[in-house]
Length: 226
Image (cartoon, rainbow, N blue to C red):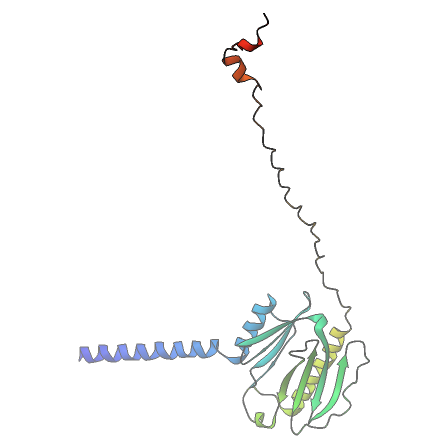
């Protein structure tokens, strides 16, 4: 009996540990936490403000102190970093129509219809980037009805309207020009000077009449004058 009781106790403890570990993994890998970690890593600080589209695995975060923007999708697996000056504007799309918009250097078009949406509530962020010019966040879709943690249609519309006002304030900020390091102009390196080849030293010329000094001169008998 003691062996059976000990075995049952071990099984219960193992089951509790596995359940606790599984709950910790689910908590750590939760969609919102993954996106928040990705944005925090990109910005170097917790994003403020932060917007996460529940159920879409996407979000956007700002660091206004450092003029940074970061977008993340695929539950935080992918991200793109921008400067705040690259954010050109934001559009609020309700049921396939642009209901409000705010662009840099333009007057804001405020939301003037508060009818309950039927298809979607979407925020579209537009960037000065030819490869990735926009980023869309759906705050509400019809399939969100009745799901835990999702916004109701009127709540999504109110949240989108608050973000339009927030983005208008951000877009009114003066653009801080980026510091560009001046191009360094380097003087061309002097070409190596080749040393002039030394002129060959000629051997000193020997005496012209060395042979005359060495051999005795004999008198020719015909040259003798009697």
